[in-house]
Amino acid sequence: MLSVVIPLYNEEDNVAPLCEEIAQALSGHNYEIVLVDDKSSDQTLSRIPVQPHIRVIKFSKNTGQSGAMYSGIQAAHGDVLILMDGDRQNDPADIPKLLARLEQGFDLVCGYRASRKDTLSKRLTSRFANAIRSRFTRDGVRDTGCTLKVMRRECREALLPFNGMHRFIPALIKGMGFRITELPVHHRPRVAGVSKYGFGNRALRATTDMFAVRWLLSRQIQIKILPE
Ligand code: UDP
Ligand code: MG
Image 1 (cartoon, rainbow, N blue to C red):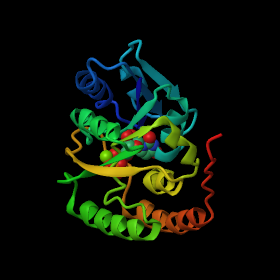
Image 2: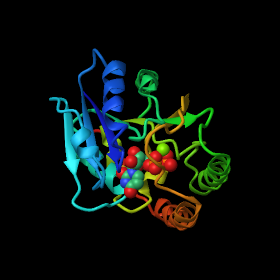
Image 3: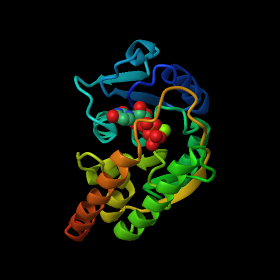
């Protein structure tokens, strides 16, 4: 079974069309969609389609993208988890390609945005941040800012609930010894709703987190037990 995990904060015009696109991309698969509403103040909750395979987790206060993602990942029932944003910038049509790559012997397949559809300032700061982060944490992926990822359920053992964690998913999972790789994916402009981040609230925090994650990785325990 597949679980698609999506954090939502004020995505009222995106949530229904996104669920529809996922249904098309995953037709023939056994799947659930776990939507985590991060206490939206718009109509996001009431716009979520009522369908048996759609589950909703409702936060009582706005907690942030990392908390919403972490909670959805913990609640997922699938053997394979698909992570994506709720703003429709990720394209569900890429999911089958990522799943096929996972089957070739990986535990986590990270999408990277081959052609970004964001403002110039966002593209530049993101490129800079990705380069530094990747060098610092040795996660080996070029675009951790791309939420679209496919992972085996076991990988969630590596994740920790802290603000900013969503940027270090590959670093934490790779650090535990899982096999990770990356593939190019589509990226689309945000057509509805607004980005929740600006330069100020991203750059500084992400930099301090980077030092913390590097320290954590240097102390991380990889348990390897011999077969009986
Ligand atoms: N998000 C969230 N809580 C927040 C901020 C964002 O759940 O406090 C969600 C948001 O709805 C979206 C994803 O996290 O699904 C990424 O946010 P956004 O698109 O604003 O980030 P960007 O694409 O600009 O990096
Ligand atoms: Mg976005």
